[in-house]
Image (tube, rainbow, N blue to C red; front, top):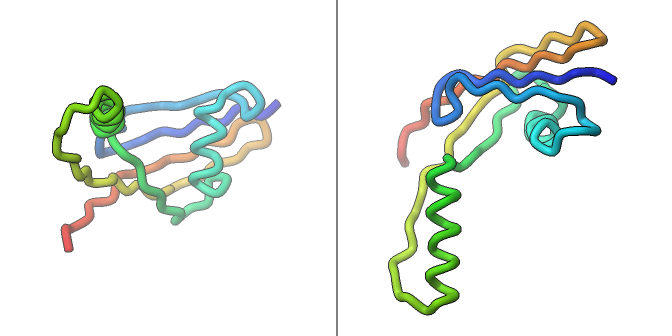
Length: 102
């Protein structure tokens, strides 16, 4: 089975490496789908871990009926900049894309 490696540079995932086989890792499957199988130029959006955790907290607060204002979080954009496939390993390099607010 082919090993797939995703290497992130910049943004909240800077320095993160996600590796494994499609059949054995849900995280690898998620990035494989988000990157359209590691297609160079493919962009995708992600929320930071902080944003996800804060949204979970808001849902819990809502369940226990605490009135708190909802947060609006910026989604982070990443782009596949390189993809190397040597039959045994697929290496996908992903970089953070600086975006400007509208």
